[in-house]
Image 1: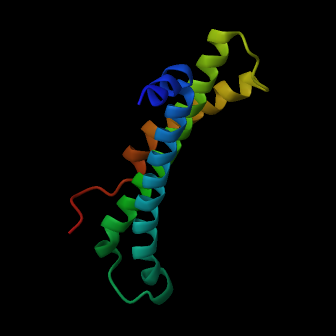
Image 2 (image 1 turned 180 degrees about the vertical axis):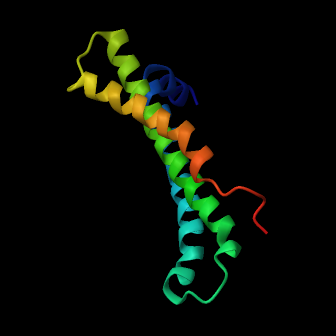
Image 3 (image 1 turned 90 degrees about the vertical axis):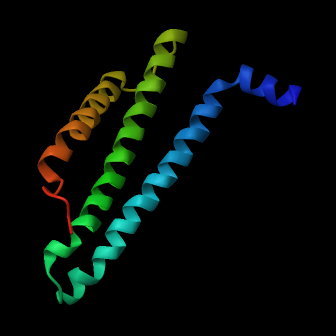
Length: 119
């Protein structure tokens, strides 16, 4: 137990990596559940499109969670590089990606989420 606490105390970045990886996997599952449940409608076109609002909502939430986790990871990496004086390759590009991801994360729900309660 002391070895585990020692590892956690000396390498906290690995814990953040594991947490974000777990949440990223969860986001992919949410996306796939929404995307794959709406896929037969795209192929067969035999049902009303309004019945698939929940599938589109799930797929969009999965993608937004992935974008948000990517933005959080890049922000975390950039912050650690600033604190410890390391240089990141293309650090201005990293900041641009972070800003773009957060703008997309907050703007897309308003414009792309279905309005109303679904069923």
